[in-house]
Length: 149
Picture (spheres, rainbow, N blue to C red):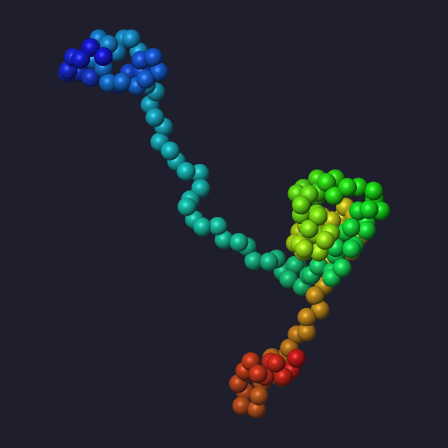
C-alpha cells in the first residue's frame, strides 16, 4: 500500500488480498491458511453393473400401454398424479400410455405395485442345446444353431 520494499507479507485489507509491508499489515487481517483440496472420489470411470440374474429372463408384457392407462383411469387419477407416485416425469407416463416408451424392469415393478397389475413376465426364449446342435465333425457353427431353432 505504501510502496515500501523489504519484509512483505500477505494481508486482507477491505476484502482484497494484498502484499503489504509490516507497517501496513496492521490495517488488515492475515489470510486463513488454504486447505489442500482432496477429492472424495477417485477418477475411475463408472462401470454399469450387468443386469442382475433375477432380471435376465424378464420382459415387459406386450400390451403394457393399455394395461397402465386402463388401470390409471379406473383408479381415477391423472397422469401427473401417477408420475408423482412413481417418481417420474409426467411426459414418461404419457409416452408409456401411448406405447412410445417401454418402461424398464425397475419402473414396471413400481407400476405393478402401485396399480396392482401384471406388467412383467418371464421371457420364454428358446434355448438351444449346444451339444446336440454340433455338426458331424463336432465343430459348432452359427449355421448349426440356426438349423436347431
